Each structure stands twice: as C-alpha cells, then as structure tokens.
Amino acid sequence: MVTDKFDIINTKYGNLLPCSGASDYRKKHRCAVSYYDSVSLRSVYLEEPSVLSFPAGDYQTELITFYEDGNVKRIFPLYGQISAYWSIEEEAENAPYYDFPIAGEELHIRPQCIFFYPSGKIRAITLWPSDEISVKTPVGSIRTKLGVELYENGNIRSIEPVYGTVISTPEGIIKPYRFRMVMMHAENATLKFDEEGRVLNEYPKRNT
Image 1 (tube, rainbow, N blue to C red):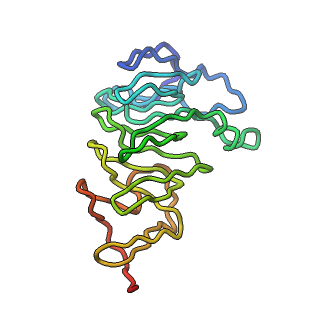
Image 2 (cartoon, rainbow, N blue to C red):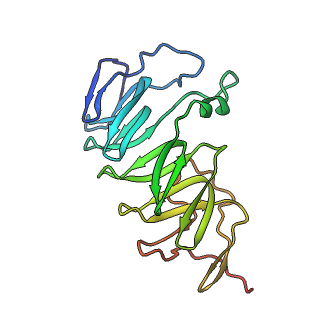
C-alpha cells in the first residue's frame, strides 16, 4: 500500500518528513511513503537526507525501509535519480564515508546501502559502483567492488570477490565469481562462509 500524504511520520528513529512530491533533477519519481498490507510502515523517502540514530550508529539517510515490526531494514544515505541530468558519479561524490569495524579492522567505506538485521546489527554494506574495499576473510584478504555481508556476531557471511580472485582451500583451488547475475545488494554473494569461517560454496576445483 502507498500513500501521497506528506504528514510527519513518527518512528523509533525520529520524526521523518517524507518527500513533498516537488520534483527536481535528482529526486526519484516514487511514492514518499509505503505500507505493508497490515498497515505497518514499510518505507519513507525523506524530503532531505537526514542523519538518524540507529543501534549500529548515526547515519545519513534519504530512503529508509522497515521490517513489519517497525525495526529498520535498509537505509540509503542518498537515493537520487540517475539520468542524463544527474550521473551516478555526481551522486556518489555527495555520499558520506563511515568507519565500520569489520573482521577486526576499521574500514573506511562510502555505503550505497546498509542492510540491518531486525536486532539492529548490520547485516550487509553495499558499495557504490566506483568503489572497492579489501576485507579480511577466513581465506585471506579479498577485494570486492560490491560489499560485504556479516553474521550478527560480526563474522563474514558472504562477499563477492573481484574477477580473477583465486582462493586456496583444503579441497583445492577455487575461483569464485558470479558471471551473469546483476547484484543490487551485497548479501548472498558468491563466496559464502559458515559462522566458524568454513567456505560453504561448492565450486569446480582444479589441480595445482
């Protein structure tokens, strides 16, 4: 269910002012507020990017989505319309960086999207297409241009390695890479680990 009412929305993360509907060259053409069939709040597209407080920290937010119980699900620090008048490079230039504790390191990341567990802990961080980070994983440092997914205890859950990544495992050498699927978010990436750090994926192995 969607609505075009633009009253202040009261949430546990503050009072949110939805987009008024006045269009400019970077605002997306979408409904400002949407609801689940149960009438629970589903998303709010804010009038202006605003810093909101979440259990995991304070983050700029332009679009926020919710679980049906009212807990935050995803936030997008910026959510502009990419077009001939506004490029993704221009959008990314205005995106804020944050320091995230990941695998015992502080990674300086410019998130395109942050995905939360219902508990409020971060599940996944998705990067802007122009960005790349190196993440310490149970099989060594992995470079990714997509982002990283975490378990609630902070261990690495999945990651999408850059093309050409070669990983040595007790079962042989693997080359995890998703050739055909276009991924929008960092969760459920190609290289998956269990909570103890063991590789979950089955890949064709080659002899060394």
